[in-house]
Length: 323
Image 1 (cartoon, rainbow, N blue to C red):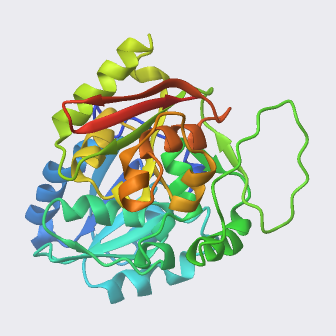
Image 2 (cartoon, rainbow, N blue to C red):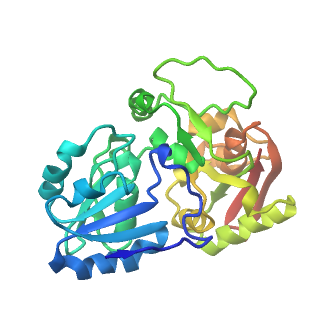
């Protein structure tokens, strides 16, 4: 059986090509007949986050028959079954579909292949249904943004996949630094350990954002919209949200970004210090951090420039617009 779902504009609308190695758009749930009710629950719970989600009844050759048709398989089965039935099909991590297994009680969601290529994303989505995502990719285990995840947040895709081994090791060692943004026409000579990202759309603006702890989603919505209105811009002009690592886990910000279909890029303190904004900030005096909104907007903008200096809304959310 199969179920196709279309995204609305507020649900993960920032889609990148399959070659970005991150976004999973077409999903297949592979389930034994006795587990079909759970498969239907998954469709109901997270189906609207994908372009399509099908349910395939398990038989011995089901993966082989549908290999290449989907970005990710959700195996509603023991991980050993999925591993044995797909091992001989695996060829290249940039081309192979991702695989995430989950048990019938939706207790654990385990990416077993293609973690950075859709399986981690699916496991995170299953977490909204109560499953615990068991991430084993190094960057996620260390709570850091690997380059594939940064590409997704920037609405870009990785051009030279083999380079990500070296650059993700640099992420783990805090040695990669911010992604350099180059506008053409320009010729660039790079080594094998330089990951090249290509934008999926024309340049726009960046929302640099700081907040008090616990600011809610509506406060972020209101702050971002008012900032854009005052700058005579709209949501369609926004490439992504930028912030500092100390604010990267703010639930209200992450929820607001997801509803707007935007990725979030978090900069380390050292990077923000290089791009400190013009408006004085008490955070530098109190905790040694530059003002997050302006510094992250400048650091993230393609021209490292401010379109709009920071403004504070509702005494909760601070927004600056970078370009």
